[in-house]
Amino acid sequence: MNKVSRRLFLGATGALGAVALAEFTGVRSSFAQKKQEINLYSSRHYNTDMKLYKDFEKQTGIKVNLVEGKGEELLQRIKSEGRNSPADIFLTADVGNIWQAQQAGIFSPVNSSTLNQKIPASLRDTAKNEWFGFSTRVRVIMYRKGKINPNQLSTYEDLANPKWRGKLIMRTSTNIYNQSLTAWLLGINGQAKTEQWAKGVVANFARQPQGGDRDQFEAVAAGIADLTVANTYYLGAYANDPKKKEIFERIGVFFPNQGKGQSGAFSNISGGGVLKNAPNRAGAIKFLEYLTTPSAQNYFAKGNFEYPVVKGAQIDPVLKNFGNFRSSNVSLSKVGPNLANALKIMDRAGWK
Image (cartoon, rainbow, N blue to C red):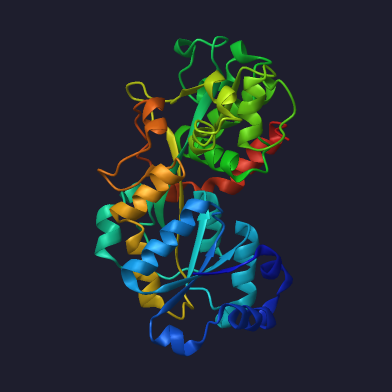
C-alpha cells in the first residue's frame, strides 16, 4: 500500500498537484485500466485502517494508494483537480461532511446489490445511491459517575432543562458533529422546539464551548462539569490505555431517547462513495463492497471502537459494556438539507 503524507498533499495544487501525486504514488492510467490499483482519499486517520487496506489488497490483488487529510481539504482537492483527479473514492466522517461532498457533485451512483442489502437504508443515500455508511458513531450523553444519577437522564432534548444549569459542556457550533445533531433534532422536532432547545442548552453551559470530544469528557472526569455529549468511539479508546484508564472509569455512558415513542439515539456514520471521475470505477466499487465484509466490519468494530453497520457483526467488548440501545431509524439523508438552518439556530441561541 502506498501512502501520501498530509504535508505533500497540502503542498500540491490543481492539475499540477494531480501530476505530482501520480508521480509520487506511481499511479499510471495503464494501471487503472488493468484494475490493479485504486486511489483512496480519506480523512480517517486510524492505524487499524492500514490493516484493513492490506487485507483488501490480499483478498483482491488491488493495491490501495492512500491520500490522507482533513475532510474539507480533501474535498477542495478533489474539486480543484476536476477531471484530472486520480481519486477513485472519498471517505470521511459525519453525514454532514458527506452531504456537503454530494452537494459539490463529486460522487457517482453505485448500483450494488451487496451494498443495498447489507447497509441499512437509513445509513445510505437511497435517492441516488451516491454515498454509504460503513460504521457508526453514536453521539451519547456522558456523565461523571458518582455525581450524576443516570436515572435523572432521558433525552437530548432534556439537556435544555434548567435543572442542568451550569452542569453541561459541549463543543462549539462550528463542529460538524454538533451541527449534524442539531439538524437531526430539527428534522424530528421542528423549528420552534429546536430553537428553544438550543437556547436552553446554551443557558446550561458551565463554560464557553471549546476543544474536541475528548476534551469534553476529560473535563467532566476532572469535575469541571457533570455532563457532555460525545461520540462513543472516542471514549472506547481510553479503556485499554493505562494512561487514560482512570478517566475512562470516571465516565458513564447514557444512550438518549430510548423511551417508548422516542426517536432512539443519534447514530452518525463514517462513509463515502465512488467519485464521478474515478479512473478505476470497478475497483472502487469492489472496495466499497469489501467494507461490508465480516473482516472489514471487524476492523471498524474491534480496531477503532466503532459500531458496525452490517447485521450480525461483532462489536468490541468495551462497546458491549456500554449497554444495549436503540438507534434512530430516521434516514441520515434528511440531516444534510437541515444543516444550514441548524447552524443559524445555534448562532441565534448564542452557541459560540
